[in-house]
Length: 241
Image (cartoon, rainbow, N blue to C red; front, side):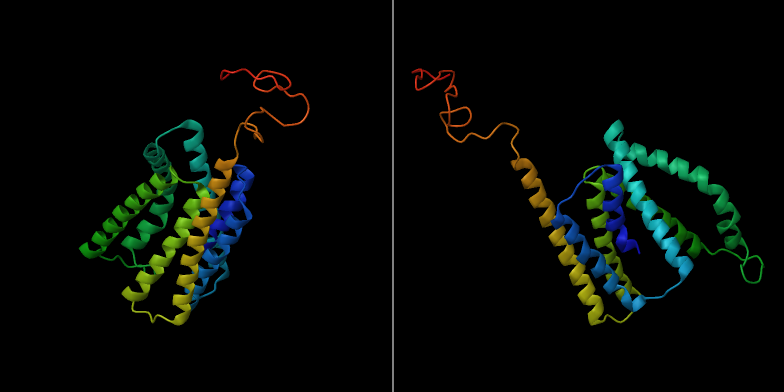
């Protein structure tokens, strides 16, 4: 479901930011999403609550990226300053939920209800997870300050290919031809997306702000009695105007 973030982002960006993309960009998103989905087919499991939660989470991440980019563009605030503000708000909002659910599960066994002792190994893993998540957010906001939300969503989707590859080797899951095909398709989609965005940028830069000149001696069309460098008819000065 997380692989569908480019679809959510391009749809919400069209509504919120009024961003228009070329048809090449839209088509290049298809192999990315399909490739990530195919690469995870060997780990497929279905749960309706999990499906709805994943869709809601993906949409929330897309909205976060879009509005973060909008705040960066409209206010000119530094992206790390914005990350600090959002981190404080998240701490205030989610601390009560963490105290009610996660902390209780860390202290008491959720099955027996007996108190459990937390090992230093678990604490070290939690600390390492927090540090890595902090670094990931810094890198994510640094990238978001440079590129568009859609490009960031594509990068996030392609990142999952690397995550899938690492989990296949670390957890010892068998690598099938379907996994390799999905990864290859997603990488191909990323290349197509980069090419489509490059073509879109070239097309945008080619639109000149000044009118097109069909004749180097005429400031406009060649027909009629249009003024030639300030002179009507065929009279032209001998000096450059």
